[in-house]
Length: 412
Image 1 (cartoon, rainbow, N blue to C red):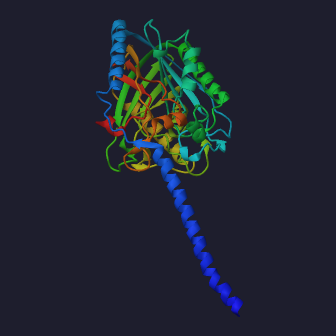
Image 2: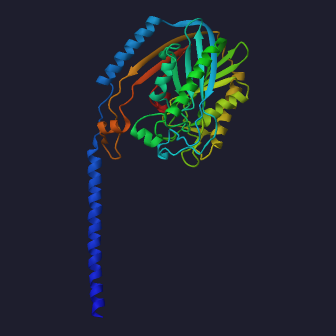
Image 3: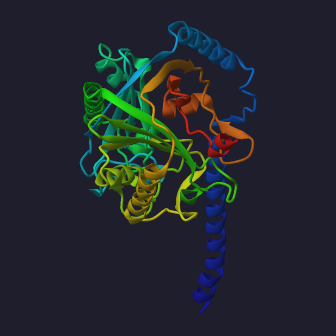
């Protein structure tokens, strides 16, 4: 009996000692974690970019680029247009790029073909310009530099404007850097070369197909297919822009630009390789008798895809396909009754200029701190060289840039 009482008296003491040890261990872990994270961050840099040395450097580069454009003058003449496309679909198992929370998990299947589409435009006997649209989330230097190198003897870099559908079902493994490879897959030269080869093939095919054509530019508001995913109810740039081209043989092409994110296929559920709703839209126009379509993502910041004003973000492909089909049907009806006159001539001008980028600025999870730029550079690599690229077609200037522009700002 006395032994039982002694054992019972010792047990609470042991529990208290273990509780203290566990508490101290947790406190030490928390302190170490806090110290590590704290020393990995610095006070948030709130210095304005406008008026900064970086801004002045960019302004100087833009001024020089504008001077070169002015010296060349405007290119005017009878329109010649051509288009082509090439598929680059990688195999199942390839990670997708866009949803970082997937952490490079491979796609389970190919839902639909991934395609790069090219439109070549020429004013009279002048050099062509090419607008390239691909079923990618973005272009990386590992793609754009080899494309430019392969085309160097045929097409000056400033006459090739790169655009994407911004699908989050396009392939990863197309960028180098620890963080990018952790989220979107280790860089794979074979995947990159597949895309580069298709892009070069499409560009060359579009130039080879140049022929006399007429064209017109159509614009309309399309609020039913876009919603603000960041600030509900705040208006966005909901303009749908369509360049419609018809060659002498009756072949018709549409260049479509719209701001809604190509994220109708959500990051949850089955992971698939897909062009999302823009790919579905291009295929639907072909089924309706168009010779082809090129889709260029507009200012997608804050902008989610929608049907009837309700966001589309589904586990499968059905919502994306329905949205693409619906938009294609509306475009097809629109062009049949729109009275906008046709033009046989075109005005072209190009400008391409570097944009000066400073160190990475990544806000930390808590207030007024950001990741140390040196640490961010080790994780992501140095900020890539960025450019702003402007192409004037007729009376409209198309601007390509290396970031996701705000659809709220664009509307203003």
